[in-house]
Length: 204
Image (spheres, rainbow, N blue to C red):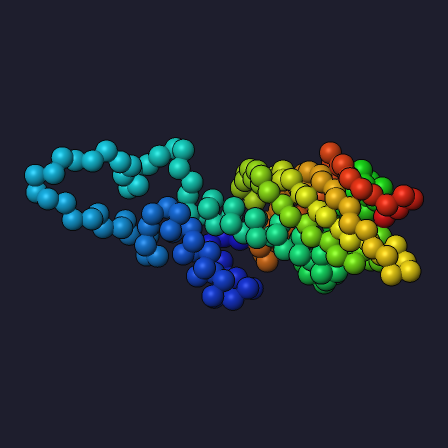
């Protein structure tokens, strides 16, 4: 969301995002440059970056805020699936979002159809732990794209008190949209899927 918009997450979340962005920029919360440490009068001038000068390569406060919110959104997606919290899952997507996990044997559908599919597909999974990394985000105004890696071990119930752990990995390619309620995923595509130690005959 825009840093000056109202935040449904509450003022404490808005202050956190602004403070984090300001810290990354090397500014205090008011946007004033941090005072330099006292130096002896005869000390030579140290080379450095003057943040008050315009730098075409520097991220603005808004851009840093956008990236923090997008990375938080992608993390909330992972926890929503692992916790089977389908209300939280719905909240990370736009209403018209398309989700495509056919590479894993899943389906391509809208959010509600995917909730129904995942609830069944994960019914024998006792534990799943989606862990994302190497997140690459490109923001273009009110639209964004993200590519990220996901590693996800799972514990599957084989019946008769037996379990088996298997491992899998993939890339997510996401499209995101800024909405009045903040950033949301408008398209999620899984690709590059691999697995190890998958139980014989197991299918999602």
